[in-house]
Length: 123
Image (cartoon, rainbow, N blue to C red):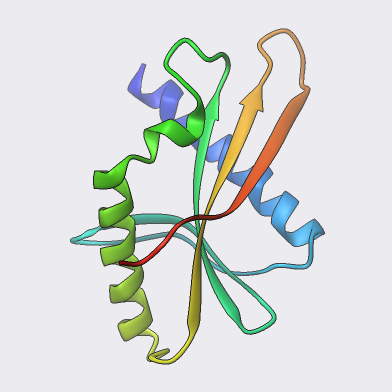
């Protein structure tokens, strides 16, 4: 089951990347990992650095995808984002944290993307 979930996650991230590129975002990094955690997609639009968490679901039995980006997950993403910013030497860049929900369909290849801009903030 873990491999299936990983495959679904990778597929959903690919859909999210295509969506972002189609909407004039420049993809900088995908699956950026360090000892603090992982960021699914790091992109840029104009002068804004955007950190994207991708969540997918076939149904809402376990809640909406965005609901899994809880306070603890947000803190983890923020820590990794700060690490990335330091690593890439981008100290004065404006950052936005987005969530992209990918709703998949078991019966077809149809899917729906919901892009939640500014889903959470640095505190």
